[in-house]
Length: 456
Image (cartoon, rainbow, N blue to C red; front, side):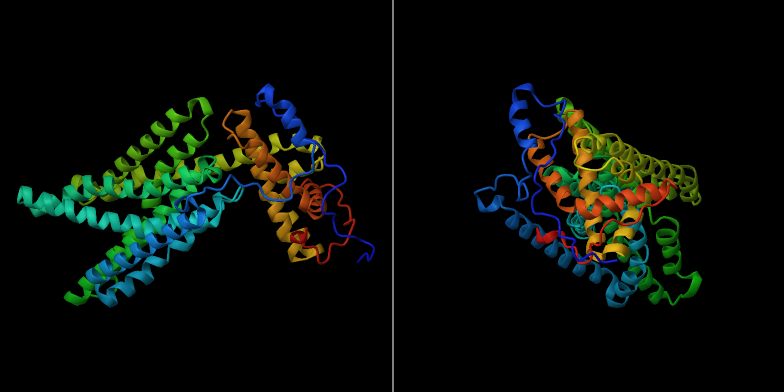
């Protein structure tokens, strides 16, 4: 029932609770930190100091990236269209699109605990589909032609190019997207799951463009020789690349993403060593698996592809899937471990850390807020969950000595966002905690119809 006397949450609370002093902060900064943490959170979102030069501004960098990717897309479109023809390109585009939503949804599902910004994932996909694919086409073609000219044996040049040159070129091109996000979006790149998801989006984009080329070329070959149906080259290519192995390219590149993800977990005193050695190790493993996959048919005979697929690719895929899911559960345990400190300080209720460490409880909280208070409240609870998770990971990194120099400002920013949404998120998460624990459910204590956290 609506309560006409209910007032919207105040812009600032009369007295914000203090966060317990963080154990890793230097003692000489403790007095300053105490003053920050006992004050009302800042009204504005914390941002690093803006750069004075135009080429260092975010708008300029974003415009340059979009322009570069657009040019790459235009060139790759012309090259693929030239090799496949118009009809082949359209057929290849339609068939290559089929596995893309499933792969992207699978990687996004892994990222549900602390979803990364869509702009990073869109960049990764676009880089793989346009920039990495363009680099691969140009470099692979040049290298294969050079080997054929040097050895006067085109057949061996194609085999050598597919087995040795292509894995090195393609995995390096895809790894560039992960490296760029690791360096320039370090705040969003915090662990293994981030590395796996970014690598998966990049490789899915690359495979999308490559599948257009292969399927379009196969369709053109069928048109030339007059075959159709299940006996056609297009059907065989579709079965091998789309049905049996849509995860091949993502599987290779995920090894590189794992290297970057583990490097992101490293403590500050080991950061330089981890940042260099682990990504390189992951890249080498990705190249090796890619080379084994490409060379399976030519090196092991006609059944080599199926032997490598069954004995190597499927077990590795299963192992990496288990590792990704286990890592996601580990993230939930981190949330359960770190957030009680903020609950003890009064920033959230005692039930909220328990609800936030369960994906089922999170869903229940969002659904409850949406049904009881409206769509805006459901969205506010979703944002609250994301900010609380980021806060837990930030504190966890600080415990390991991996927090950046802006730890205090970043913590204040996150606490401010939580405080803005606490009036609707608190009851919803408390309800979810009790609902998922099979305890008696209290009724909603207020009606938040029309609640909009962005007014404050």
